[in-house]
Image 1: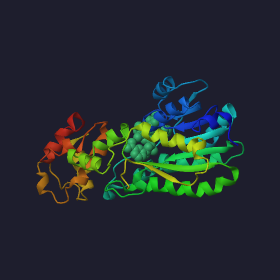
Image 2: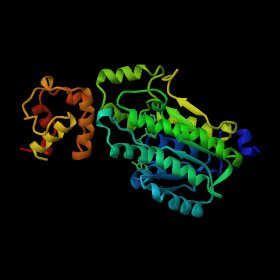
Image 3: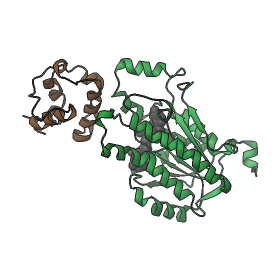
Image 4: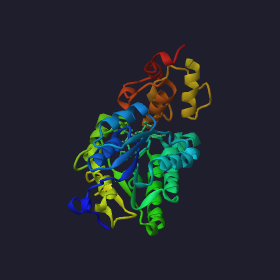
Length: 257
Length: 77
Ligand SMILES: NC(=O)c1ccc[n+]([C@@H]2O[C@H](COP(=O)([O-])OP(=O)(O)OC[C@H]3O[C@@H](n4cnc5c(N)ncnc54)[C@H](OP(=O)(O)O)[C@@H]3O)[C@@H](O)[C@H]2O)c1
């Protein structure tokens, strides 16, 4: 059923409790700020308490909380999540934005490097999904959004391990969408192109000026902003996305066109 | 880190026998030295020394000596 608030504004997230990981920086922070303006109450997750507090200070409305947690602690996720839900009540949405990206040329790949990339990008996403499948964790009508990457769709030299992690997120999204549909919970992924955040600044260190220019040229609309991605995430969380599940929304300024 | 230890690390990256690099080699003369090594050196410097390097900075290096100099106080004689 569509509430009065969403009838007048289908993007409204009025009163919805939404957990955003990676909320201490970049896309996660911009998403949290936008969702607060749309009326949501936020649970902000990341490792840096200080940066989460900065995000908290930028939010509209009340009822938000910071929940510092290291998502590399894969085994701890279920107990942590259970505790969170017991304290805050069921979620209407979850945005998995926490992630890491490293250049790993094939001949320098190690098991340790694969593990480090997979832990937060894939294992924690999978465990969060498991938690969302638990009794009373997510309300019917709820929506999960995972931040993948165009790297999961298009190749790039030196990024194979990162690409594999994001490809896994995309695959995860599709099967989970089917599994969660009977509970009226939607699962979608957003695949951004290059977005101006700390992550892109780090990526730039690995590229020559010419390579950065070539990369920019592959984005016909230029590099994106964190807000550009946040808009797409909010669209999938709100009732605007109520008939969308199992999809991968590329938000990439035309990179994959 | 001692210079000898750092040279061993570079040998490892190049799949050389330990002790192959002596420290004065020109990069152009080293078999297997390519742009991918720079990517690995950036993450190595970050993880081991907390040092922020870039491809542009490393691109200025012409010798192993220049690479060692890039590592500053983190690699000593
Ligand atoms: N920027 C881009 O161009 C781009 C393109 C495509 C996809 N993406 C994806 O978008 C997502 C967000 O990236 P961003 O650009 O916003 O990067 P960012 O500014 O570097 O933010 C990454 C976020 O992930 C959190 N995080 C990392 N490891 C964590 C851990 N172990 N536990 C909890 N939180 C952790 C960080 O928080 P703490 O440091 O506080 O832990 C931070 O909030 C990532 O999944 C990334 O792969 C980014």
